[in-house]
Length: 337
Image (cartoon, rainbow, N blue to C red; front, side, top):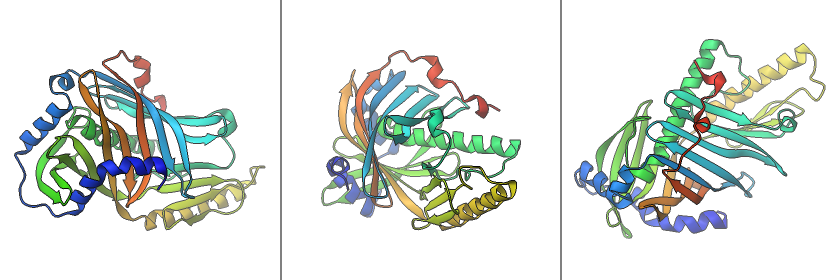
């Protein structure tokens, strides 16, 4: 584990132990638990929140053990507008940014790639659970279905972040709460809140019994599928079933027969890798709470997949109820139905 991720995880040790301990009977009334959490997060100030903007740095662990650090931005306008802009690939001074989120039922899903990086090899993307493999032929109906899946995925990602920041359900993606008992370890106790939502969304939210602040969210899902796009050679799958390398026919483009052969190899490699994806535990840790205009927010959000730290968001600048340019929430044109 790298130093930045390591130093932030010590704050979550108590809840990590609690998550692995057995629930010891029923906890408090769930409405009371959530009301206390919202009070600890700001009470009336939290209830008056309309917009939130965050800029900061993200640190991501690479498969080779190194890390990358880039900037990110989050724009939120309650109850149903959310957009995150972050770097998905950096090559020297040039970066590829992804804008993801939603505006009501309008999907935001764009990649801002400079022309120099729009073609050729070396691109890496992480396929989220439920996403369609790249390069597969799709009909208009399949495109529309993929957009609906991506919209649901974006709303679920928003819900996971929002649960630790607001301990609330929003109209953009409403969730239900139920008592999950009280988890206890030698280091402390945590209320366990079972969370469910549309599309099979299930998670457990852990709330500290002393501070009443959210500590961690855990859920089960397929491991990410890492796709590497190279330049020459064959399509191969690897990385313990979670990694696939896709190679094109070469710089000249190849004959139609070459392209068809490569397409079939890509499809076979992706199908093989998809079949090997395991269901693993995901965890989000909310740490280093600070107060902004009377609202207490976590300023470090750490992500762990299958017991391995993968990335961390560090909030550097937070603005509460500042005006946000409506263009930030413009749905992707190609994604409109």
